[in-house]
Length: 243
Image (cartoon, rainbow, N blue to C red; front, side, top):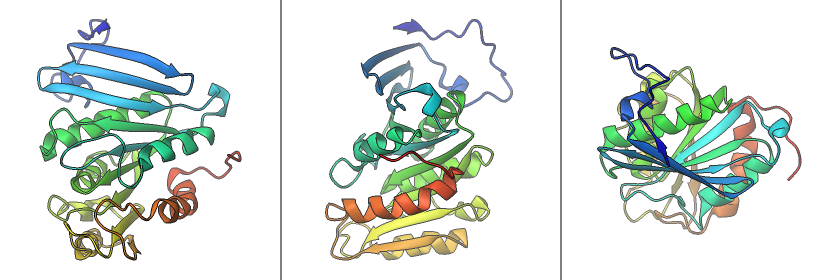
């Protein structure tokens, strides 16, 4: 564990970064495997957790990253059958860092967007020039709000069964790539929510998943295949090594 006082890194009191605004008390990190890390940041508002998938070798690393968040109850696995873990392993093998953000205070939209912004800054500090953010359910609004306030870093947004509440700012995405997945049998948030967000943004693609519900438990393969086609362009990565 390290002291988070930041004595060697002065904080701009007028315009702090997202990470500076955490007012970190301490951080702790463990290397689970050479390509998988767990970082915890202690703050007065709670514990920010990040699971971090890394390329096997630094020379493989692309100048791009994906940063993902969960729903109103938090969580680090994402929808489907641990979809975020699957994507993290897959994209790290291709040289793209993948960070999974665990909220300090789930269901607090502003605080959760701050947490996701911290994940984007971590990815950027590690060398990512373009970041795609992802969010499930409530996390869709978190992802869109984060993208809106970080136009220089966030190059695209992916949502899974998103809510429309909190996405009223989506028009400020300014035409950046937006991909929205939704099950047509969603029992919590009707598919119209994703279409509404698309309309608010004025652009984007809605991918309907036949027969699937809110957790998208039937669509891991369909989602993964579509992301394989969509992400390289959004991330600005034109050459990827084979899995």
